[in-house]
Length: 278
Image (cartoon, rainbow, N blue to C red; front, side, top):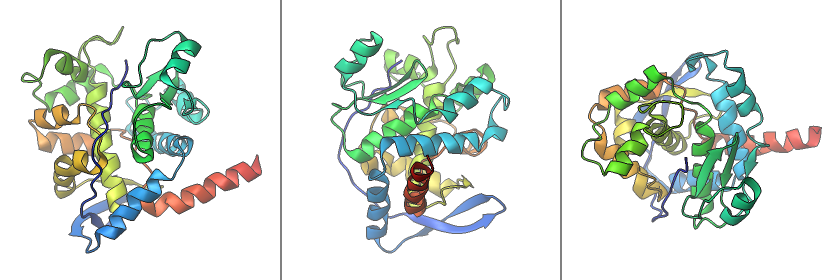
């Protein structure tokens, strides 16, 4: 199923910063940085990573969250994540993808996870930042919700006022062989919020973290204006009826996060070291 993204304005706003940590879990506070220049740099540094670097880093984060998987022994998921970097395409146009795999996608379907492969179409009208975020979103789709997880995600939203197609898309209706309420698109949009929080708060690359209410409020308010992406995020955010439940799911489910700016330099250095070792 294609995941459609729309390009928009880029606007970076003030950000909270990390104020403490417990064991291996970072707790994010609500103190706002004085300089928005810092935040602009975080997003700019992230946008300079290649898509394959983003894909590899997000896949590794998901692998490090196996204890949150419904089935920590899922061998197929583990293999898909281990090979996610090699299975990502960033230099194919929509037409070239269609020719290679016999599909019918258009550039407006900017990213997709299909055939155990991910792609951001080369002719998609997006900035490098937005393309990286789409690449990360698609990698997140390697994790498929169980029926019970789908119920949990659907229980925190009220989709009744959304257009028919949008409602069914977010709910999970029409996913071949997987039922009508799997909620994969709901959980991945929550993942996008967690990505946003990680980048803005400069979270260390190798750590999971606990999201606070103030951080979630900021993400819900500013995600679209900051990133310029609205792949049904407006619909998702407007449909949230249980923000407390959303926060609980975001902290307890395997929502892999993007590499934040504090880890950007280290991430690039690590990637270069890996190349030298090959």
